[in-house]
Image 1 (tube, rainbow, N blue to C red):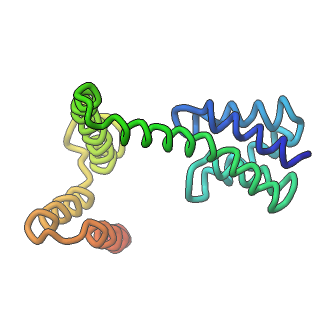
Image 2 (tube, rainbow, N blue to C red):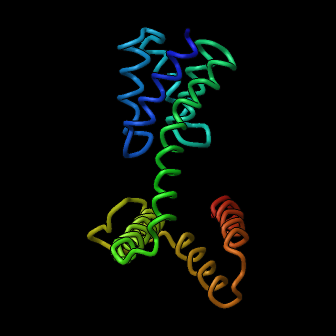
Length: 187
């Protein structure tokens, strides 16, 4: 019975947590602390900390950790499957609808309208990361003199390598990481 309860609780979390892992935290807390007293608030905080530290989505990590705490490996599998299933069903449905109706001009118009928005969102995230790397804060400071020259140099070198030699971006990122470790340890 605990497996079904875990599956159903995390199915609801997976279905209604729109906005990422941090948006899912209150839903997870409501399910595992308030609605079902499976964990104390201290245990919940510990699990959220571990879920944030480990690679992967926070909601899936927390589902796995809560499932392990309550019912071992089968509980982890039930909770994780419950968390992932709604997204899989929604994506598969959207893929089917797209495949079936992709030739319609209305669908093509919607996709054409979404392209600039997606490009703008990716560019916004990239610019935010660049500003964070160069100035150590998320927005441009009033005084632009506090630039981090090591980060600026690594960025310019990586951009030059990507544009001039068309190297694989994974290699450039790995090289930038190594250069950052070496340069920040020296300076």
